[in-house]
Length: 280
Image 1 (spheres, rainbow, N blue to C red):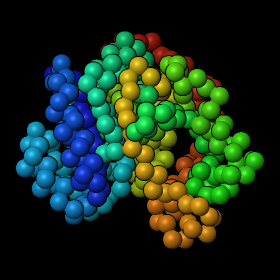
Image 2: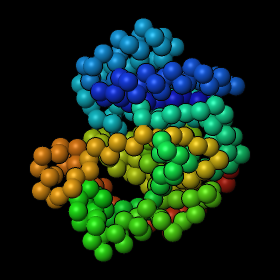
Image 3: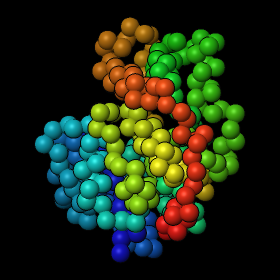
Image 4: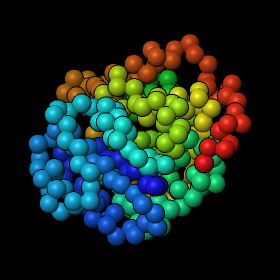
């Protein structure tokens, strides 16, 4: 039986993919796994490179750029593992770290999604978990509005800056750069909502996990290095016009807000059902 299905969606990141897969070859995981790589029609030679150098990877080549969520969904449909793990192209994974995160999930069968500690390349900590956002968070985080007093306060609250990042804890959401997902939880929750072309699909998935009675947990028992790109960042509000990635981020934020406006916070009413506890 396959223990874990790794899933990576790539778009014009051949060098990062080469580095990521080279690192995986040296992990020597103690259980069977599969690696599904979805090439989102980048046309940059990634597919050919993977076929030649990494034949153990299951390559899925999309006919067009279908978006992050839809591309992951294509891999979810084929994944055979007990766990599915999202791995961004800009991650570096070191020996024994995947095993630590899987062991944590094995020991906590009510956890549907678990996220590791993420480090910057200089080994400083990244904030990889958050509260559910309001409609203004994408603007605060991607424009100069975030430098205002009220913008900083809102972003600090969203990023849970008061939380102890060294402690395992239940959180509203995890960033999709590295998430271990229990396959049975994914079957309960459903796949990514493809209305989100990119951004907020991970927030939405975490919210639906809580609604379905599965815990979402930040688990710093394992550490990965994340070369965070932040392609949607803009310095001025009017720069949204020239930055399509930033516009996509804001649009997804609006879609998320409209989907959940007026609904109660799912963690306020969640009750963990006994059936969750025997789903190992």
